[in-house]
Amino acid sequence: MPDLLRLDGAAFPDDPMRNSTLRQLLDMYADHLLVIDDDDGHLCAYVLATPPYRGESWIFSLGVAPARRRKGLARTLM
Image (spheres, rainbow, N blue to C red):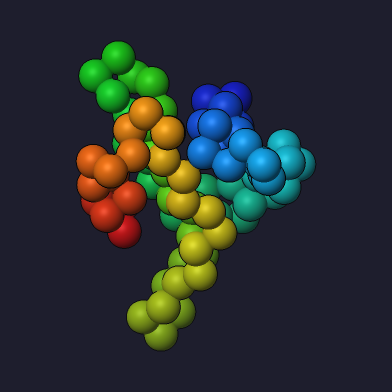
C-alpha cells in the first residue's frame, strides 16, 4: 500500500488518490490490481479496474512512474 501510494503521488502530483480511497478500492477490487516492478522490486506502474462485466471494465486509475514513461508499461498493463 505505501509503495502504491508513492507511485500514485508521483504519477499524479496535482491530484493523488487519497489513502482512504485507495484502501477502499483495494478492499473491493484487489484481484483487479496489476502492477509492474523493476529488477529491484520498486513499483513502476499499476492499473486498478473493476471486474469485467459483459466484456467491459472501468479503470479507476492507471499510473506510471515519470522516469518510466514512454516505455510501453501502460500498454502492457492494458
